[in-house]
Image 1 (cartoon, helix red, strand yellow):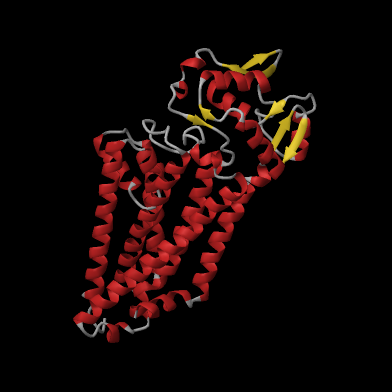
Image 2 (tube, rainbow, N blue to C red; image 1 turned 120 degrees about the horizontal axis):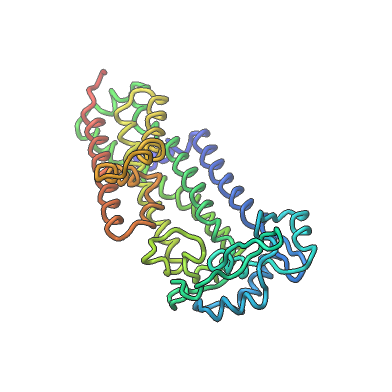
Length: 374
């Protein structure tokens, strides 16, 4: 029965098309924001794409390690302010214009400006300098590791796109999980005995969880391997805050590798919760289109409620709890979990597990108690 249910899902051309389209678009989007968008200026000389990445790696290797004030000062003295920082453009024309007077624009001096610099007006032009008191920054207390982390500042955006596309494809593939039995009137045969009902429900949910897990790791994992292929694995040792990845301020010194592991595991957990939610909607529906619409609303609705309604209201205790409930849903759980403090992480996870248990129980009840002939 297990293999039959797997075949039932994967034999549909629309499912395979949606899954393939989601993965290819995620990879294309990631490529557009990584290699194609890389540009470097080294003493007036322009580097593009993979050459820019290689040169950035060479420059950053000299300063890699625990971030100190001496590291920041050395970068600033050697390369100065980036000449392509304001209204940054990595087109060939934009790089030529920025490099016309010489100067440098690389990962290291852009990092220094982003974290320790400030813009000032001189002779009607914007220039950058190290801000007053930069040596007191918390990033210079010996906990943070610096190194080349090119592409990491875009990684969260790429992960979000791959994550959302993957989960949308999962919704499309799993919506027919139970509703087809009602629409095709096969429920009268499948659900003829109480034992058969629970066995079918259990098998289909297991298949849904397995296929959703495999596709999630394929879709989101492809982004990771693409990153490693072009930027290398050295950036995984850089502190995640310096690499531009979301993490609670108390733990943002941890490595990028550990941060990505947390994000991917949270994404996997939320994907399994999504399977339970879609299964419950499918088990209680009667028409495929209705199930699809309700599943999509259940998926995107909570975050929309936060942005459109809850964020406009005073942040009292009730509103704060409603925020947590909405953020514990599959679409927003990974990022919210990463940035939440320890207590918030526990609350979010408890709420997500409650949603998963409730959806699982509701789906099993509705399918196993369906009245044959209805």
